[in-house]
Amino acid sequence: MSSSRAGGADWRALLVDEALLNHLELPAQLPQRQDEHLDAIEDALLGQAIAAARVMRDLPENPGYLLWDAVRRSLAACRSVIAADGRLERSALLAELRHVAQGGFLFLHIKSQNAGILLQQYPG
Image 1 (cartoon, rainbow, N blue to C red):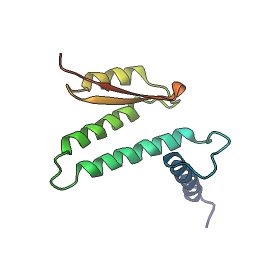
Image 2 (cartoon, helix red, strand yellow):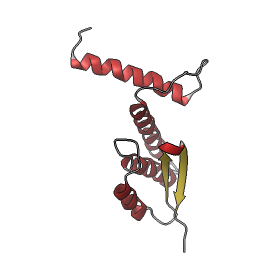
Image 3 (cartoon, rainbow, N blue to C red):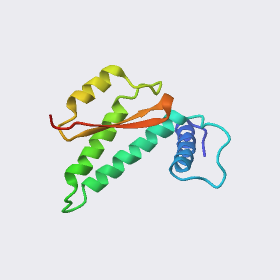
């Protein structure tokens, strides 16, 4: 294997894949430190969740099409409001909140609090 840029990128992708797996399941031994590339891991996890929602949405004769599309849109919106430093970007968040349809929802991850929030638009 050459040490070209592509090879280096492949190596980093493998590290992210391994870390992603550790975030999806509990490994036999928990890590004693925070992952170095946490932003990349979180983005990859979010990308996998968006892809999974798309697959579920596109199942043939799917009565849950609208629900899975709403989940996919909400996850994509969550991804769009996260700034490079992991904080919520105010202007992007306000724009996404304006687009939440009645009965729709928006997932948010508040990194500093290690918390998730589900916002939902109700009639009235």
